[in-house]
Length: 281
Image (tube, rainbow, N blue to C red; front, side):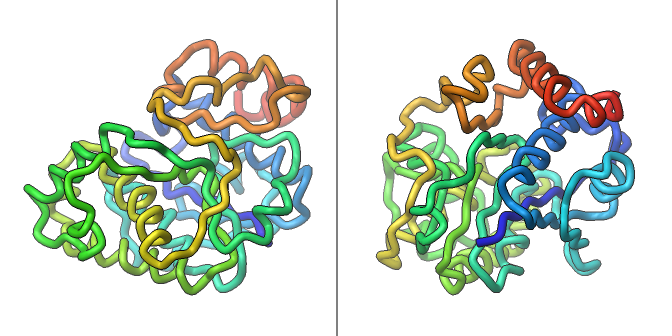
């Protein structure tokens, strides 16, 4: 099973200065560096899909250790408010089993064999997180087109799954999921442009994936078997345990704005990969 990553970098403020949710731009690039360098320790082949802006930084400037670099086709456009669509396109291109790993995920051991053989894989199950009910209510109110799968879900509460790691062996279902989401976003393009909500991305990538699997009666295997019911994801950025008691970190969402998390990230990169750390500075 191959490991892939993806980045569509919006150049509004200059690609190199792009924070992408982090406290400062340097932490954004330290995250990509540590993620790819750690993955390359355990996997000989590490593939990435990106646009020109992202290639200029990750490949040309930082020379991160990707064995295959794929530029998105010129006919693909990703709106900044629907940023996760770049990942969806990446899933749709795959013709063999894969695990997509986000650029803010860091591992200190290879993924378990149960994931390598699983039909579908995600980071963890999410139990009844409130914002899914709220964003689905907004979708039902404001969107021109709602896929039958989302229409069938009712009022909630809803389960979902985290897509920090996502993929599997069932390529047919993964591509079906991807094409349904691409169609969903295309039919509601104007809504996404006007919206400033990032929750729409979590809905069409994570919620939709979970219920597509459930509808198709295909089980999802998880990196973490214990479900998460707290949207703060407490404990998922514990650098103090690396590498002995902590082997997986995902600095998602608001964790990127925590100074201690950013400092731990930079110190870990400086300790383990000093050449890349100083190149970023």
